[in-house]
Image (cartoon, rainbow, N blue to C red; front, side, top):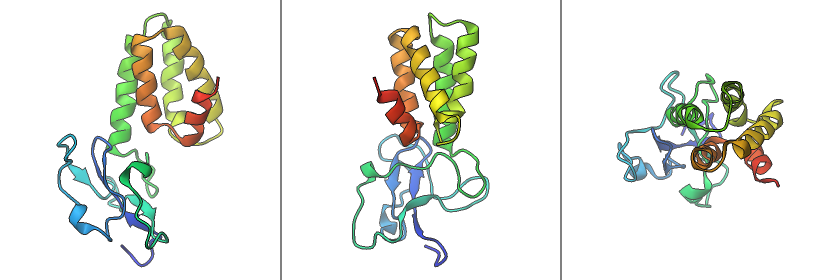
Length: 165
């Protein structure tokens, strides 16, 4: 861990499984491949080589279970999506194409909304409302599958909005 950093380095597989959220304190956990899916692991952004933020370095003696750490969607240095974000966005786009009961225009609106739900921003509430409405129209099947993929990469605010009645 760099003395300038206030975060531990995280090690995450390309599919988004957290290997280690506190890399400098547990370097033995930094495996090259994921034991869940076999995908290769990374500890830095592939575009700018900045370490992936893990837990706050100020959490000195507390061990955070991997299940409580949510990997970031985008690099904090260059803004590019991490491989797991790109994979989930692509899977979402493919699932949208499979939705029955939606017009092509509605499918396009869903696709536009995908980027707005990964981070909290001025369009997050609009995107979550739109997704909720259109998934309700799309029916079960692919709509349920899309909802599950979206929840995996959506921001905390989006998840709360989608779970509201």
